[in-house]
Image 1 (cartoon, rainbow, N blue to C red):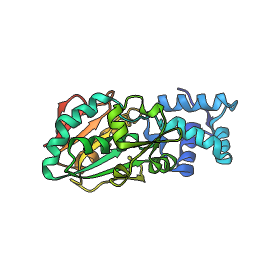
Image 2: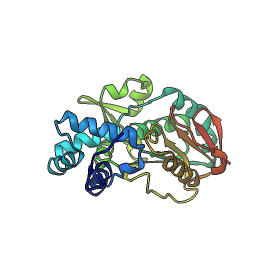
Image 3: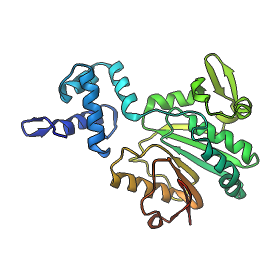
Image 4: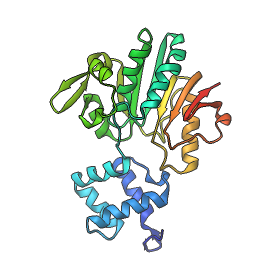
Length: 264
């Protein structure tokens, strides 16, 4: 895609640098063709032909910045998303991990918390005796604040098993809220996956699903390597159904099921 230039400068790069200073999101780490096309479309729909003019609008109008962040951070989630993965976790992975007596899990790129609370509920049903800690991180401070509220819409529950939903969530106005038993074992924090460096062997299970598809391949591979280092031996990494780990053996991982990797 061709880019406009100002005095020999690349306006897309300048736009990305402006966004990084504005909200600490480094768009230059994402695949350029896809991301640039989306951003230019956003600007054109607002009647703004240039990216630097669009950046000025984002600096001036918080509402427009919020809309922009929603579009680029892709906060799409739901409770029990991809049900087959939860069935697999409950039937095989969680019982294996629970033999250690505890499960330290990380929802990496947690959005508004649906994945993290689902994981807590599935763990409580599958391995109730295990000591459980579920951590969720996301780059978007707005969705992290929402995750801490533990509230979900009716649409968020469309794939949730009715019995499990009723067991672990309370009916509230316009939706559902995670019960105290889940909130007590689930924490959230703002964090950029491109910068987080978790302690080695600090997790038993990491879910990083539907998060890296827009990253450049070297960025994706470096992230997966850091996630692998954060797993203890015998720990598991789950990725999204359209994602894969490149050369897992080099990271000490082996593919044991579709989209599921175990650390040696």
